[in-house]
Image (cartoon, rainbow, N blue to C red; front, side):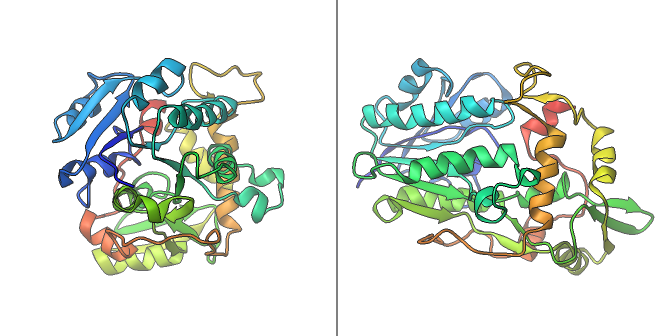
Length: 340
């Protein structure tokens, strides 16, 4: 299966961006592929930066219109498909993900790579409402659906990860108290969080397109650092030499801090959701379930048959050293920046 032309949805964003422009194994740098990045705004700073890369074209096209999908898929060999769950209603994300796969098949693509998630809501927590993490679950549900499709008609691969390691500058960012950095979070000392370096999304995404026959019909891990908060703190101390400690706090306390920065009880997506629309969620609703999920997570299991490609960054310590992490605030996601 030879691939030459690849369309990367979300190529101007946090997760898919490193597949196009990352420091490790970026598709644009190999010279093997012609990359197309669809975006609603080709004149944004992010789009212009991507357009300046070699072998990359930025086009105006949207994932939530049929014309946009057909435009994006026309003449392509493969795609990386991701939808921003904070900018789209849950039902719409399901519909347009299903439709994207159908139109990709109609357009003659050879490989459909989906940014999915493991269905922890079902597998670990038996559909208990406390753990219904909307922005994660929608990708798990689409991944479940995609897994049932006939890979002979349009081969698919599901790339999955977890919370970004870069969120140590936002969601997991410590609070400074004098010379000490306090990592306060509503989890326990033995809660396991699978942190993913964004550069590993880039490396594993590139690996999929370089090994399409091997990846087809499989789950692909973006490479997790399975760590507890005390382990994060210990690594931070080792790398920076700074004093630090972990403090377990109630969710209510964490949301008090978040509410000081952006509206945690406003329905999402902003501008599209009504206060009376039960098919939408607030930041508090989805992240309350998100925190509950990680609080009670003790496992490191992967879906059966998962492939683990070589990683750009092998450990949390390596990530902290390469990024010169110092425990300072830095928001990696456009969603949170725009909510302020």
